[in-house]
Image 1 (tube, protein in one colour):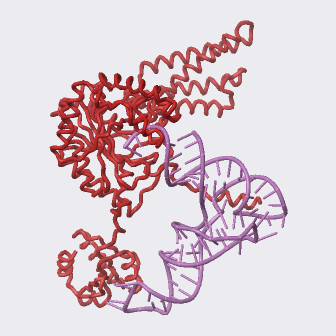
Image 2: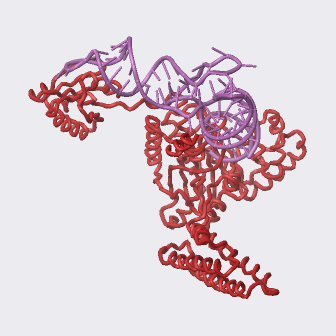
Image 3: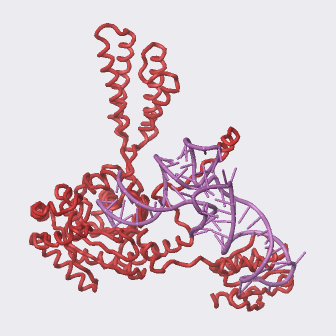
Length: 534
RNA sequence: GUGGGAGUAGCUCAGCUGGUAGAGCGUCGGUCUGUGGCACCGAAUGUCGCGGGUUCAAUCCCCGUCUCCCACCCCA
């Protein structure tokens, strides 16, 4: 038993990718690369430039843009405090380490406690010297530091006076004040792993004064996003998005249409199957609230016929009732008022023009009056693209217009529209329809034998690779049979045979693995031959 | 966060209402030291997801837990 336990301890912990994250391996990564490469190419033809963004941002950026009441912000973000919290934890550790309780009760532990606290305050001083970051408000921290030291010396005095009459409550209050001040240090900038990238793009637009560039500014990005959801088919906690945003300039319907055209072109190029574009307009700050009220009123009339989820949404977000999947609710939903009939004049005109622009571009769409977007910042044009083979998460792209978001984030009034593609889902759909690449083979496998031949083989590999061929050069000598077996398993097209004969003759043997044909070439001829045939 | 299904070799899976594990594929080696795919022979790899309980005995029964899959919710 004890032996078993000891044995157990020797074995290091087996690590595994944490829930909702995964490794992408070859050959699948070849497909990812193809998708991303295609995005680079297609987006470039539409005049979009790539923007590379931080993976984390201030929490507030997402809270403000996506909306506090959305699920994404209220329960799905990976949020953590920056560095100052670590300082506080260090302090707590230090106090514990010195053998003192966090709240000393006698002289001995008091001196330990103040020692640890003093060190903590000093370390804050270091923090200010080390970091030139503007994230920390020097003045505020200086003030806090003074308050803290003052309060601590007061606490010390109180403690030394002993539990004299009337001082107990003073002591308690002093403790509370110190804790409060320490609490402030905890509020180092709260950071969040980005759950999406639109907010970041807007932040970058503002930060780099892009309104001074020729408008509109057209940017695209790709990379991982993070949401703490329950994993499912086509849904991960670290997932990948490819997105694009058009910021600034006008809100011309042609921009909406061109952005949609671009995604469709991209999907077309990838031969994505079962592509279906749905569009809608959800109005603006003027007309949407009025519609929402009418919708709510209509819903209240049929409340008892709805499921519990939808009943709840009547209060929280009536629009979401529209995309309920419940079979039993479908007939009821069909009777609800359409937003298209309640758009203000400008929104209606814009929506009509977007549809016209799409037609001119030959983009096939379906109007879906039940298509509503979840994030707060969307207005007017919204769209969603679905593809086949995705289970119940069949949306592969979602997007819409978000005029006013830049302004909300402290920038100038700016028009905006964009979309995000779920790359994981895109890949999944491509794989389901048999578009997955096969295992990467090699152009040439070099079967060498003998020390002299290895030198030749190394030179041959270098030259072939320089010419762009994929070459496998075995690190150790192998029997010929084995070498050819390896070449076969690796899916090589050719085996270059280099043995004593070849080296002394200066004629290299090239074998075509598919049919077993062999021919001899001089070194330069071989390169020429391969260039012609590969 | 809620519900359902599943975890046995690298992969796909067997394992009899309890007696401490097997197959196929793959990997490696050999038959085969200048010729691959085939065939034959051989080998390695498992804390039977993890922890606890019942039992003389648990991969199997019970409880908990973790992970994966599917769906709800929400979203890309």
